[in-house]
Image (cartoon, rainbow, N blue to C red; front, top):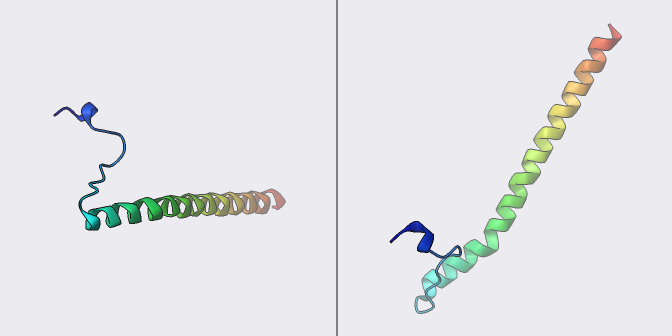
Length: 62
């Protein structure tokens, strides 16, 4: 089949409890993974910004 016929959400077969459990676990954990990832990026950007600002202040004073 063509890819645009597939649904945008994952298919959950109700008749298979193991797959249902795994899918629900992924749905519960993935948002927290992305939140942590974005927080890590934000922290890295802030660290680089502070480092560059302090470097600029050091060069200005000389």
